[in-house]
Image 1 (tube, rainbow, N blue to C red):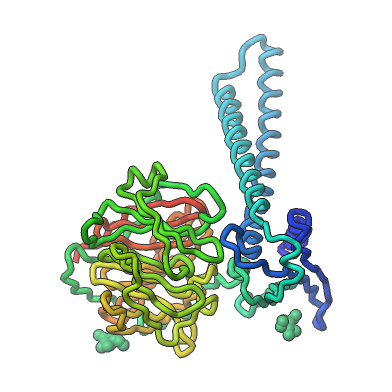
Image 2: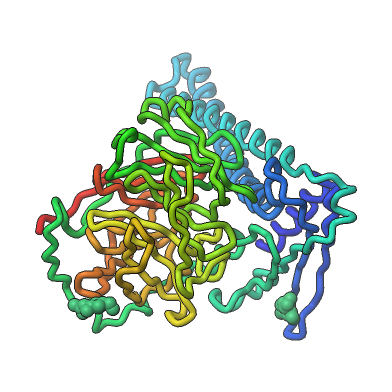
Length: 468
Ligand SMILES: *[C@@H]1O[C@H](CO)[C@@H](O)[C@H](O)[C@H]1NC(C)=O
Ligand SMILES: *[C@@H]1O[C@H](CO)[C@@H](O)[C@H](O)[C@H]1NC(C)=O
């Protein structure tokens, strides 16, 4: 299936952007597995164009969605025809109008069909936008001395151990993380030492602290209108400094090769209307969706580096640059969905944190408490949760929580690591990924809510903490 969709995709890609001239090949490995590979020359880093890898991954997903919806639509149409025929037949033979219940069924099916048709149409449009953004010209590419991007995949029929990698791929500057992520989402439960799973005797004194016990349904506030916003981060400042307030909202769309735009909104109303009150152009490009806003600064990871930056919004300058020692970056230890989510800031009742992993930790999540003024590491914890096996994480009251899936509608918060007691705990708190592509999950301690960027959509969740 995966191989087939790659094939389809390769031909789509050829058709959609002939000027990129990808090469495609199929070989048989010694153990009899079929290996499909294709290679696409990388474009110049133009801000106006998506990286082919990113656009490609998004196109692929849209196509999958569309195929599924098409099937759904066909089956709905069939049911609709049957029902219509049935109610007509009955009304003819009995000279009566169809049973009210049946009429209701027909109406409901017709509504569903209309809704599906609308969704199909909007997906077609997204697809067209994606094609339009594949814009590097043939001339610039042919003479380009830039690296080539490639990946290959083994036929899924012979799919082996997922975490040994059914895919074989390499890339120099591509955004193929997303594809790879499909196979690295593995259970992390065996990583948790039973001896560790003691009950956390939390005695935090921060206001309103406790353990997470419930997450509400997502409420959607905004939807990005182009591919640059498929992934992103939206933020509030739990401890704002004037002129900012707790109502202020910031947003970064993170699909692209040179992400520098930080949008600022006065309040939720302005945010929902989509009119930024200011756009900052950051002096250094942003990597992925890990940034936070705290006490008037944007904290973010500089692209292609383990450098943490503190950007002061009032003076529009970078106040602090600091490397995060040994931290993996650029796809070494991302969350399961990929997207170079190696380094993730978090803010909670206790302050500023960063989660990442290192070779020493062998891919397990490492948490460091940071001094927000200097970005110095104050203390570091190494958990037993493998970073690649979870979809995202956030901190509440000094405890790290992880999400098991970025794409399952019914995901769960599956682990907690308490930095107070250095102990892990297995959890099973339902969490809905309504739009099935969660690329950012952060907690806002001022409002006690979780903010998420889910497949173009900016959503928020209520939570409940246990009393301590
Ligand atoms: C995987 O890729 C590497 C480097 O590109 C190559 O040396 C190796 O032979 C490939 N393995 C398979 C099974 O294709
Ligand atoms: C927890 O781990 C930290 C960092 O390794 C250490 O400084 C602290 O003493 C530990 N606390 C407990 C209660 O074991």
